[in-house]
Length: 170
Image (cartoon, rainbow, N blue to C red):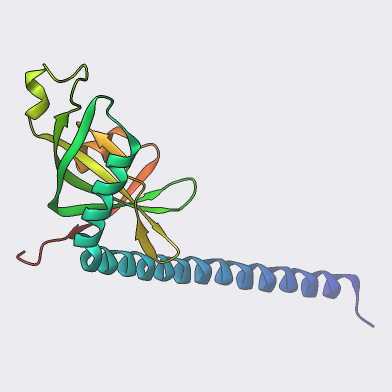
């Protein structure tokens, strides 16, 4: 028959063994989770490079359909050569912030028709969303912010992931 001391030793060994196994599983979960996220970012970056020209056109159409800014018509928007992938800290969603140059024209007969600055080119960041393994856009734009500035401004919500070169020249 086991004495009380032997039972305590076996029980202690059991607790230590379970703790070591749990710690090992926790570490393995972290390693595998990082690999899964890294693959997800790589898929998103590759798709962004491939779809950039279609996304550029779709973004212009979507942004123009919003009616913002009031009194202006979207004449053109041009993606810059690179984008920043970011991750939303709360939801884990992946977004691309793409620098864009926008040209507007005034609505005929509108309040902005006499404003000389309407024809000035504007820099901004287009917001693209990675949903169900494809890039989408609703035409959302962060005016007067380049992607790096947007990341800095919203640093409490966004984690930078990587920079993606969109042009085939670089």
